[in-house]
Length: 153
Image (cartoon, rainbow, N blue to C red; front, side, top):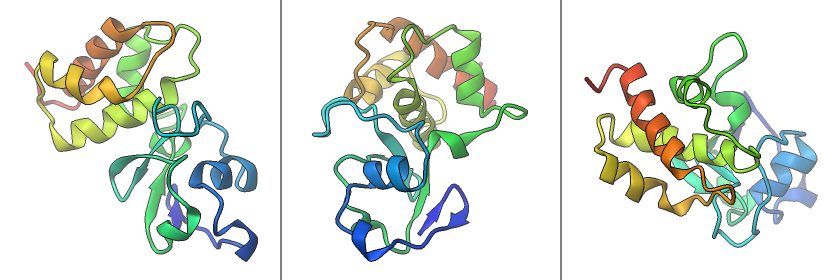
């Protein structure tokens, strides 16, 4: 598989682990967070072949030959992804724990719907929970990211 553009070999002992566990414990990519472990919160969201996926539900054996992008691969300190830039501009994080998953979900959503309405943002982001309740700032940041990507007036 490829993780953040790099080819990664999976040792046999890791094949039945969750992708989340493999990313965090084997590759050291701790930006992807463990939340519920059951696909209910979205803290572990990554991109699997460009689609948002809850990595806690995906066994490593299912991603052989696929491409994974984590929050570490979305942008860099020198070159933020437009979603990350919007998150910063809109001061979205409070505790910050869910934010990597929120950002990954938002980026995948905007790839599919580059010019969403607020209602579409609300619906798309509903699978990712924020215990601090920053939903209004999250929606604002997703709409701002669409502008930064050049798709909203």
